[in-house]
Length: 258
Image (cartoon, rainbow, N blue to C red; front, side):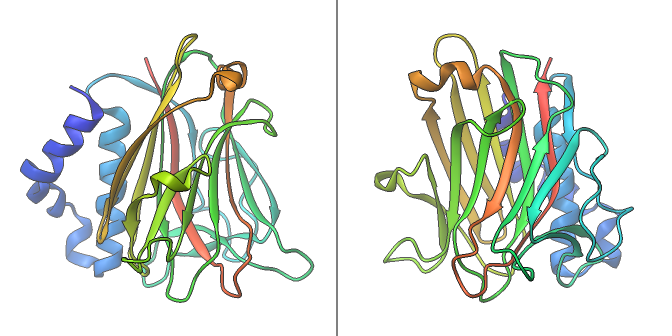
């Protein structure tokens, strides 16, 4: 069973089971979305085949308004500028907040995998939350081990379609293929499946959640094949161009299919 088929089955046929998680009785609407999203990420990343976790975030032990710990549940992180642990608005769930801080216009989280095992199928997933008024470009890029050289990146930005005020997505700066949508003040799920091999590495992107949807495929440029085959890091960043560029990320996970 593919992850895509499994996700479709989950959304159409198994949704009531997701709604009956223990989170429901005590959670607000947004908090329920985080609980359900966490379960959905777990199901999508594990799928029907065993998998190896190469990165898994855990911000619970870090105090609010402090930088995330270098050592995560699996893998490590480093930061530049305004990345701090924070409560996701209207919830009791923690994540990382990307925003301006004094003396820096950067907000970058480097997620370093515990190992870089080479050609395989990898699944990156996270929950994202953009509060009202937030703007500016957010980029998630996939890099070789050690960071610095990317082979594919995804941009998220508001107001990118004239006929739809909701934010959308693009891959590798290709404005001819804008896709998807998300809403402010709603938690949504981003999942990227990377098929890395010696001939034609590719990516499949899925956006889902309240007011969010979208799907796209991309083949990695041949000249970036060598970098793709050394995949070992994910970089999440905001250029903070807008006056209010704050956003939140949590439940960041990277798995490798066995």
